[in-house]
Image (cartoon, rainbow, N blue to C red; front, side, top):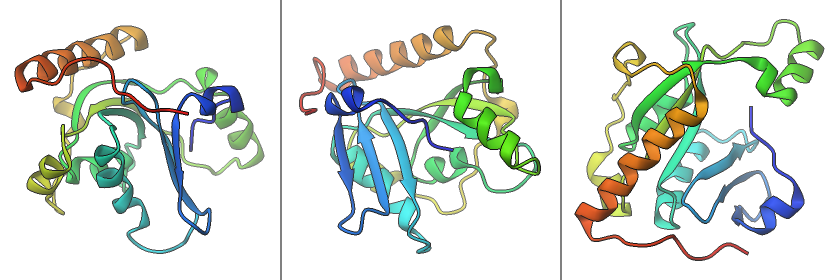
Length: 175
């Protein structure tokens, strides 16, 4: 599932597509990585997105997690050093695209959680942190009942990290 945005919202983001248009990512001015996707069918295409996003200003993201034991995005992002800062139970009423898709595909997997994550602060940090076997234990991640509070807490953590590393101000870019 990819969260879609309006054309006017995408115009305020840095948007990247592979030449074939089958893999892409958008990065908001505040470093939020959104609309990550790949329909290329090539193994490993998604794994290239995270280092690329970080190299282009990506600092945070949120994703869906599944409790059925199969692969989840939070673990893929975790391999590149992403840290889970909070989780909350997925509620489909807040994702109309998911609702419509699930109605059309009754057997579709339903996420168990939305996970708020931070990314390493640099491409070098991604490379140092890479571990193909890393898994994020959602049982050890703080639970929230309020999405905005979860995002505010994650953003406060990023602000502290920025002060301690000498990074100041908002990220530039975004067309």
